[in-house]
Amino acid sequence: MTSWFDTLAESILDGEVITAEQAVALLSTPDHELPALVAAGSRLRRRHFGMSVKLNYLVNLKSGLCPESCSYCSQALGSSAPILKYTWLKTDEAVRQADTGIRGGASRVCLVASGRGPGNRDVDRVTDIVTRLKDDYEDVEVCACLGILKDGQAESLEEAGVDAYNHNINTAESFHDTIVKSHTYTDRTNTVAKAKAAGLSPCSGLIVGLGESDEQVIEALFDLRELDSDSIPINFLVPFDGTPMEGQWNLTPAQCLRIVITVRFVCPDREIRLAGGREIHLRSLQAQALHVANSIFLGDYLTAEGQAAEDDIALIRDNGFSIIGHDDGSDNAHTPSIRNRGAGTAQGANA
Image (cartoon, rainbow, N blue to C red):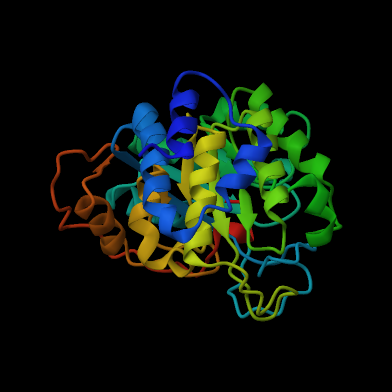
């Protein structure tokens, strides 16, 4: 028997778009219907991305010491979370870390720095790193995540060889001021627009589990669609001790899976990335989520550990997926051991 979300998937494949009411209804799908919902979402994924998975690798260029007040973030002003804090990595160290991820199978390196936004000297630092990476790995994608951009900085990054710029909207505009007051929702959307206008691929996503309603999840997704974000990281809140959201475990694995599927229905042809907190919150449902999402981070995040890179590779291979850039079907037995580099979650710095 054909379910209503099968019919919805068929209509989207035919070029129609989902309504907000339909998207909210997907988030209310009963648990016993989840296998059918995964199958419907997987049709959309396969149409645009086949069975390939993109591996991304984070390099935390600067950890903690952030003046912003984001209540979810272990690096924010006022946080007492037990994380490492350090200023900018030297170019050689940043390149060494990126090299580890690339040799492990990553085709995109994400260069992340905490803070409100970069100074021009910071842009120059990133330029030096990108030049070295592109000299060594011509085909690697580089995504910068440096905070709110000033005029001209996106153009400088693009000229240096940066391929994409990440700046998450994090949540719905109607919920934004609940989680941060030191910058506005418009500050974030303006940065995404600047990146796109400069020729950088816009990367923007959200954090779920902050206390937002289902309707606000959908509001954020429709805004991401309107922003034309090429890739959408989905972060699942890790409520670090020492932050205002300490102890707020608001998600279940099934709800996380429903959210991932709903993102695919709203943005069927966009790269959807399972990001910070996926291991903790999706748990045994990570494989099902990969049948809908098509991108993950390899190894650790910015201030929290992920699962071992070898386990990420096994998750992909065991479920019949291929890795972009490494699609020979090998077991990747020589994957380097990739653990925390003194840094940790994607939600901590808009990854």
